[in-house]
Length: 251
Image 1 (tube, one colour):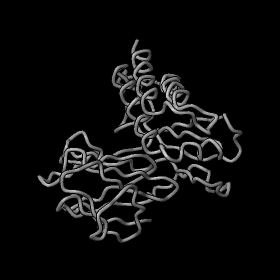
Image 2: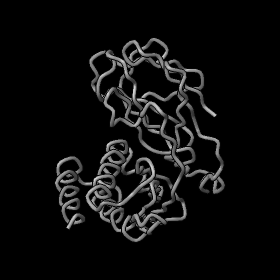
Image 3: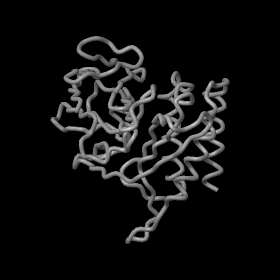
Image 4: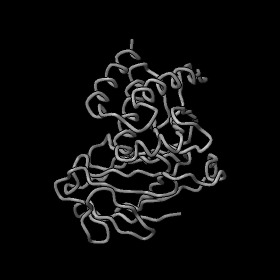
């Protein structure tokens, strides 16, 4: 069974990466298993007879549980996203674009409780084959309790941020995790010999976007300063991946 295979993979990964005790009442393994259940429960059959599933999964956590994952949140999102994508692949489900997982704080939830909302968001694939981010994605979170209005899923077409690539192509960043690199399987592809196959990653949450270098050969800079750890981006920032220059615009 594909689910059992992926669950075992999740167990192995989480046992290694997240083996320590957490202040959170929710365990990473619980989130992984529940996500696979949600994928199955939301599958449908389209007009072409394909088994289709949503591409956006929003995990809502209590304030305490979200804070308990603060120091490993980016890694957690990355691993949960990878697990969902692998399960979709093994089951032969059809998904528009690439599946994404994001976290959000829900002040109405008690510690140890969580909810998963999913939806399908439109995606566009440029003619050059480089992946582009969802044209409308789910909203995000804030490490601290935010006003109730900000917790509502934003269905507008306005993305939290946009990247302008050296080619002039504009990539919308919505809630979620994006890997940038030269490899064609990257979420954002930069076809430049100075860019590593997996060069950097963006995390978009609560209207804020951070960038982190992934141990690239030529490094990542924001406004000429090397990135160390997670760098919060501001409107108008210029990001260099090696010699490739990208402009960041916040909505």
